[in-house]
Length: 217
Image 1 (cartoon, rainbow, N blue to C red):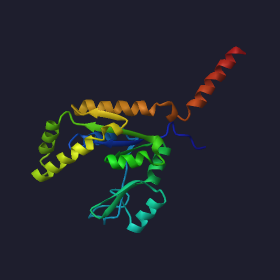
Image 2 (cartoon, rainbow, N blue to C red):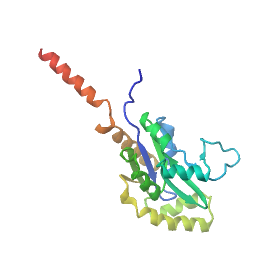
Image 3 (cartoon, rainbow, N blue to C red):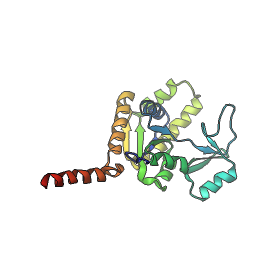
């Protein structure tokens, strides 16, 4: 007999301007909690050496990708430098129905598409803010990965990204990565315990009522 999962999984949207700590928080969350898995995107670009279908990406032809979009099989999608990228609906739906949480690292536009999708009831969206613009600039430079031109571009994009902060369910200010990670854990704990996300709760309460009735007999 198949057992019902204790709860339906969450579809976690995590967004931030570059350098605010989103990637670090995502890695920490998945390292601490094995029920959280990262959403694997689909793309029409060719696989790079060492990449495997279903691990780094689901590699699709443009025709197959567009058919998924047409049949509502993509939660979100966009074209970037001539290639299509998106989040297939089927594996995400399968995961959350099995009680697993799926983490999405997407921008505001991708998050908005997901919030308007058929899985909107499972969405929990979190935006990460830097403590200041000066600190954001410092963090980008401390990574020592980008040229001055790229850093300037990222800083310019950050203003647009931050302008959408109020579209999210929760907003965290990453002053300290440990404290911010703890706050993210608290959000997920509370969301998992919501009454409408505990499918066996009604049966449990009915059992309590039967116990009351037994005591009155």
